Image (cartoon, rainbow, N blue to C red; front, side, top):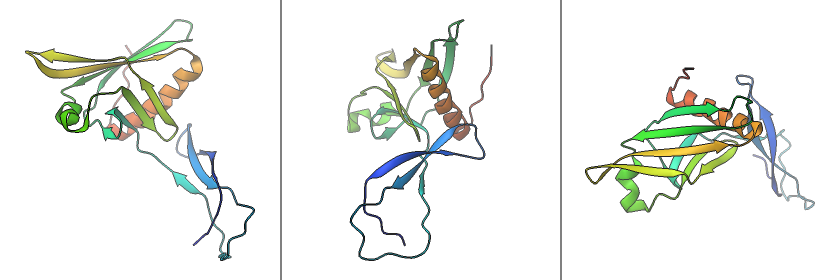
Amino acid sequence: QCLFIGIPSWVAHRSANSQFNGQSLQVAQSRISPTRWNSKRCSPIVMMVKPKIQFIQGTDEQTIPDVRLTKSRDGTNGMAIFRFDQPSVFDSSSEVGDITGFYMIDEEGVLQSVDVNAKFVNGKPAGIEAKYIMRTPREWDRFMRFMERYSNENGLQFIKK
């Protein structure tokens, strides 16, 4: 057992199975020495977050979306359109609260958008369309890392048209 007193700091961690970076959590040592110290070598704790999508923070969306990507010819910007047919958020929104946005969460953090529209059929909620806009190549790359993780977790395939 390791005893650390200190402030957490994030350090990049490269996985052998992926070309993308994950994150490790390491705790910086304090100037105050602990009263007990185990002489065994301690290793960093690797923080892995299952990629997920939420419309209400803290409530994971269970429905897998249809995702369409567009990218400008010069590659500087793009847009992702997510379409959810009968999303599970409709089942829990009256109990949990209102839809507050579109959140894509993974081990690197949160990508979010407020461009969310509900579709209604005969006055009943039927689907959700959410748009995520990427204005720089860096934002595009970050989004693609999320999508690779989310796709691997949920069995999605990329089809180029």
